[in-house]
Image (cartoon, rainbow, N blue to C red; front, side):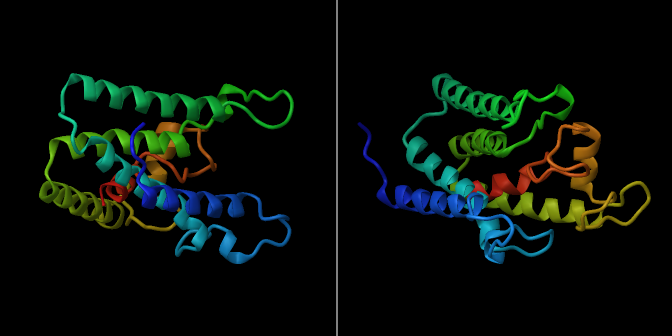
Length: 205
């Protein structure tokens, strides 16, 4: 049995505890504000749960692959694990808690938490295997700066871009045009396509 990294296990356990508190607050009619997501700008402790999981993914990659060579077998394991996460996320997203339990195809959400973790794991693992720490820092900086410039300075359909929840937000625009009805909200998805970029940077950190 492989030796466990106690610090990672403790951090993962505390993050799961916070997730349980967020998902089961006791009553949805009177939830403490720290246990609710921020409407858009800003953040609450609840908004730290998923970034914590992505940070744990990145940390686990280091311990799992620091002595691995980037050969075909290692790449195959990464691809298989990624496909498992994507498949499980899509499988769970196809069901609902009330009859008839299986959603119509038009209402199935393609992105999701497990799908995002799968995408982040795939790219972070490959980058870690093929790049040294200096290159990884450069990639993180490039991703975050590029994401900021894209959303904040590149015009969209002749309009000034925005970071707000609006049609001229690049992340919302891409999700709406590529995912259509397969999103968490009508106009955006919190685990959408473009926002995967800073999530990869979170894991690389």
